[in-house]
Length: 479
Ligand SMILES: [Zn+2]
Image (cartoon, rainbow, N blue to C red; front, side, top):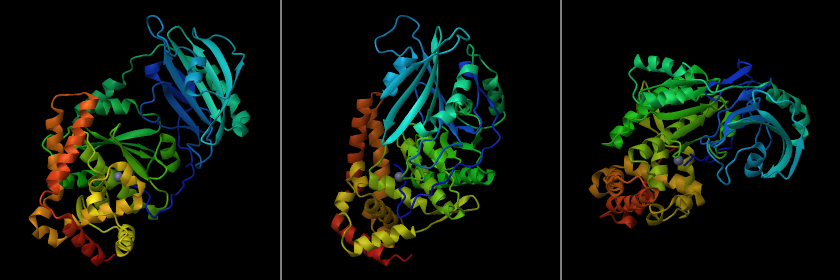
């Protein structure tokens, strides 16, 4: 549910200069120590990588549509007993399974080290119109295979290959060690009054080097070399907005979990992490993580914070509705409404109009090219995205109308639409779900909850009349 780059063109930030990162990388919980090739930066891995444990990218990333020279480390653990069919145990199976190279050549592997035998390959493949060439060095040990993989475009390959090989040949392969980090963090949190301490500790232990974490009451904010002023403002704005969200959309079973927010250093790092190209940030329901980057230009600051507020709304609603996304008009419309928040001295001072969105929807309304309200409110996400610019601006202006029009305030059946939608959604969902944890039950409960929420919200409402009032209101708004 990203906030789309409506009417904006993406700003492509080139890689920022390297910060002071050490040359030696220790993955203590895996017993691996390796040296970082000069010019390479650790980039966080996209969530839920099963085998990949480290990603080093030259310069931290490159413009879109190019292959950044990258060094990856994958770890495959051998099953303790027997070998199940299809289980990955060696370098070759790993490559065949995940890369399916077009060409593969086995190379001489050098000497055995730390009880691990070397296996080396040079492979080539294509993906989405880009050509890749890769040097692969697997260390096949008694209980695991550790794979060092360098990737670049065929043109850059020769320039990087020696460095990758050196990393593979000099890496230390020891048994995992319990380190004192966890105990240290436990002592740190014992002195502070944050909830969800176990989660906060796990998140901090998983940070790759260069990344830091900042705790606030409801959030844990992860950031990489961002300037301190930016991180502080994100933290304080999130807490301020949250107070408004809790007031506007109260939820009895409020989550005690710390919400995770990741601030990438720039667009290159954001894309390397798996960020969507069409957005400045996004909320991932699967990871319950809000991901954002700071735009380089100072005039991009507004869009960065609008995106933050929009995605923070998604994050709040998703967790407080019991891990359920509302209908798109509500989810995106409210998200855009809060994107207009103006914060002053630790509180939401006002909610402003979004000038670009207003201009666009006024243009559409004047030509009668908007979606009928009866269709808009029932749209599933795919339909909503199909004409994203129209539906985002229409949903936003509809929510803005419901929240700010005095005509709505005077009419009880209109004024109740937003609060009734949200309360019915979460009550029906928790009733339908009961104690069940099954995925199918979750989907069914979600469907019922959304239907009932829509029916209850618009009960007794003449949609044609409401649409006419909304159109009139939109036409009267001034940028
Ligand atoms: Zn959104």
